[in-house]
Image (tube, rainbow, N blue to C red; front, side, top):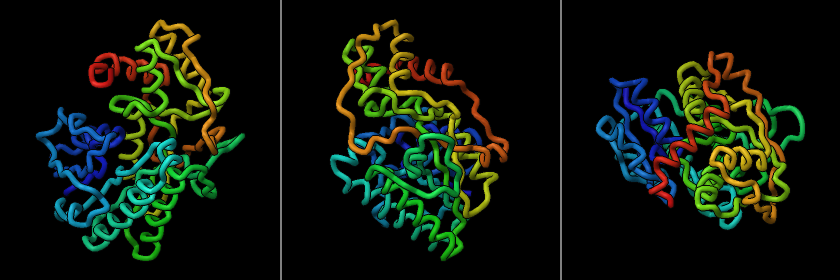
Length: 311
């Protein structure tokens, strides 16, 4: 069996590839990555000899063909930063939608066994109370989440029209090793280490559900191994926290004062709360392994060990 992981040199993708190598040591694993600003081949250094790396773009059919005949595709490749999508949505539409469509065409022509699309809980939009289930209507608020919703709809369409065997996962906010310092947690960690102001949008009361990246990767693998074709699966940490509280936890861990917190103008279309119901993936015998306290400390320790990369 030959597996292709697109976007495998990025934050979640690289963590997943390492898990995949350990879980399937006798299978061929190829990684296709464009190596944009958020991708780094060094994230794969511990397993570099166990994988085939292909420098390429999922928008380019010829780059995908370099992977040869694959049986399984895990599509992590995407532009993912909400703020960047607000500033310029073009790259998000091109990579997240057109790139996914190019990859689906390849999958269809090569009669693959399973196509796993990695998505986000942001496709649902905001919810003031309760939690979204997989059949709830999409209501994306940013160009990023809209592009991911569009990609999902293409994946579902290929399943319905061509019977392509697909699985979709929608994860909540990830944190952990290898995350590029534009997302909330690494930004706050690195700002605190430099004794710089920690920027918090609005009043800091926006709520996100947080999941340690290893837990999400295990959830994706569970959906691949045990999930039903044509279905989507929420993968959340069951750990809802306000942004202001995340900042305070990080400052306390680093013995930094809370007066480093600086409230800044809120971003346009800022969703108030994300929350997903994960009963469906839990029915497949998946659950989180790390508490937030354990996960955030592991994350802080990683940035402390690797601060030379960022500081």
